[in-house]
Length: 512
Image (cartoon, rainbow, N blue to C red):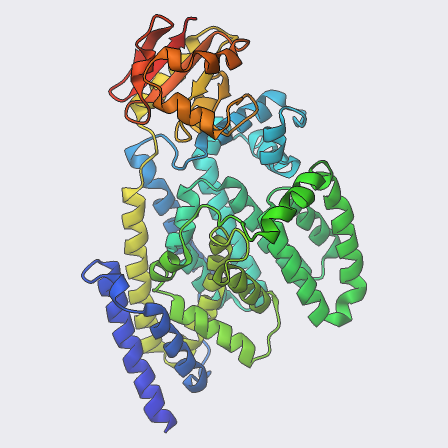
């Protein structure tokens, strides 16, 4: 009976591999089949039928392949444009410039939005990279690729510590071709990537019982990225309770982490606690900007069955390590849409990658020939998908428009710039060299949404004259506007002069 089930499993794996390959190469739509259900069925079949036969070895130097893939996939977009990818590029550039001009000090009380967006731990990391030779331009490009490599290595050494080097290799290989991880890079989630590096290192240190470094690294997570720190705290607490024999070490470590992390949050307790009570009560918590869970399932079909298999294997072996706890907590957050659930898909993908490495490892242990064949085909199809996405990735602004914004650096030193849309705001902040007014962002904005709507739709200057008086103390002022995003007729007035323009981007100077 088991032989029949096992044969059926291998036949289903072959069918699944063919369908995934066809979907990833766009011969069929990936949305016409419930791949996630198919993957779950395969994992259930596999956990009861696969046997641990002969061991096999992956040479250490094989990790050069996934590291090479990380570099290639992240470098491809820069072959077509020197402008970094992502919405927040300009905001990060603004921060990097401030950090570098403040060395050897770390700026703290600049503006409220700045200190809320860029905590001290992040500043410490960027200053370290700056001292190592990364200027702002490099931090925005090669620096982020460097951090991606560090994240891959952190994944490798932690997985190797938890399991073995073969599982670590497969996990690193999956990371290098993960579409979700590439999108994390292309969305320019700088703090998220750095926090993930520290998260993996923290679990490595805790597993190694190196408690003092563990505390210090954990504090870095808390001082860089709150969502990652929340996930870390939940995993660490549950791990400590399960491994109660280590409580004499983990409790003091936990207290130390709380005490050392608290200063990073003390100025924001009202915002973090009081201001969030109402959203929590009304369940009005944001999803976070990233792909949805549905999209993720269909983008990760190459390793979904292996991730599920690895999860079932950990349960079967009663291996209550970080991987199992992480998988359960992260999945609950994303599946039940608890808080910033789309952003937590980034973390979920990391743990899926780790458990998928376990699944691939045990498939190959059972049947080397078939296991390697299926794994290689699925990895190649995933590689194609990621390379395709990398080639299609483009910056959110053209070089011509960016040069136009940079020309504002030639205006009066005490001038201000108004970015009239959210899509322009980061670029104007980071590349104009001037203090920036933007809808709902930064500290100089004086209008609410209704006033901005009135400004956007106004047909002539008389309709906004009273609004512009709100900024009478912020002059000289330049206004940057995309053609088509708002009514430009209002600028055909003696109170405005055209500073410069491209085909679709206009800059006006307020003269009245």
